[in-house]
Length: 161
Ligand code: SME
Image (cartoon, rainbow, N blue to C red):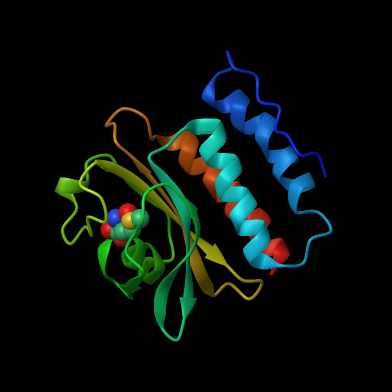
């Protein structure tokens, strides 16, 4: 595995993801420890897109528990159906929230975060085993391109389970 990411600085968001995806696959190739892989994936996403917060929650004993992330400290436990994360888990689908104030029950781990995407991570039987959460301090950053590629990253993680 290479110790550096190579992401073209002037590229579009889509081009950055296209460059990042094979590098993520190489980064996790041959490593069996899930925590190590989630840690590197969150660091690679944070380096590439400079989001406010990006990381994982894993389902443990019927609750989402904070897992590897990059950014400020965050809430450690989120119940099924609560907040954006718990709702994405319950509905087993990606939620793009352009304005968190407009999402009933949003959990404000950080008052600086104003928009968010949460995508579920499925195991090979289709059960939700965690979520990938991205938070931005801007309203105009997260969009359907992120949804498309974060879902691809979630699918990569499924292959690691
Ligand atoms: N805002 C999330 C909580 C997790 S933090 O943003 C890291 C939610 O509503 O579920």
